[in-house]
Amino acid sequence: MDYEIVTEGLAFPEGPVWLPDGSVVVVEIAGGCVTRVTPDGRRHVIAQTGGGPNGAALGPNETLFVCNNGGFEWHRVEGLTVPGHQPADYSGGRIEVVDVNTGKVERLYDSCDGRPLVGPNDLVFDNHGGFYFTDAGKIREDDADNGAVYYAKTDGSMIRRAAFPVNIPNGCGLSPDGKTLYVAQTLHRTLLSFAIAAPGEFIAETSLTSMFFAGSVVTTFPGRQALDSLAVAADGSVCVATLVERAGIATVDVKTGGISYREFPDLFTTNIAFGGDDMQNAWVTLSSSGRLLKTRWDRPGLKLAHYA
Image (cartoon, rainbow, N blue to C red; front, side, top):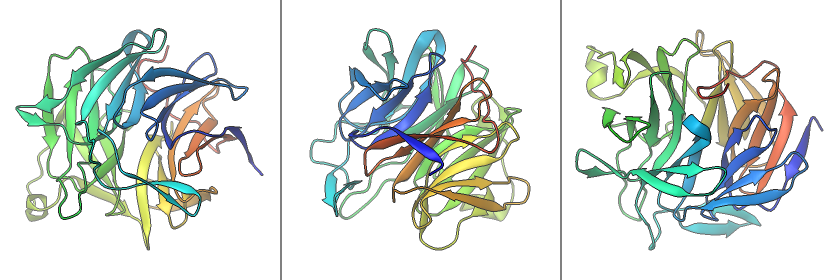
């Protein structure tokens, strides 16, 4: 076994965030809370957000920014916890700010230009005082929402829709030079790239295909794989979680589209986060079995904004 299980018993953990003190914060989507996990595996609930806290990232002044999707239906299938459609108690999508020291939760955004946020999923900060986030929408029994990519300022002063429609966008991350945003499409099994013209603005494409498809295709995954969250490595490759078939973390060479795999024992291996002095420690969420693992990676991860 080339990994260690740090802790178990989590309620569909996602969004791992490494903190410089050695602990890792995760969201528990099915538990509606944000939890700190210490290196020895002890768990402490930082905040109760309700809804469905989905993605998280360290923001300015030791705050945690959380994408809250408003909640899922939950099912137990062969002993595993699996998310479903929009629930009867859906509480609306929003971006929340959590003080990791006090647990205070503040709502930063829940709409854009009069349109409500539906299912915010993942986010990444740039070096210009803002962040990109995906909104995957919601699936209901007879219909589903179109997804989108948004850009917003951390102080609550501005939010704009940067790309629409994007079918079920999930993980997102910035290239080392900050000039490209990568977005994983869950059911389309496609890793997209968006060339950035200015903060929150993508370079407009003029091809006929741009009328029907947002972004450029980096690579498409074969078979019945689905894509979840992602993290960018220091060398610019993209490490994206794969669900169901070949579940684990796939590393994509963004220049060639080549894919290599590292499989893990959970059909819902959903997220990876890098940390440690050399940024080669990796924490991976095994969501349907409620576990967080730690392993060594073959390359260092990219140090994100707001880390000293």
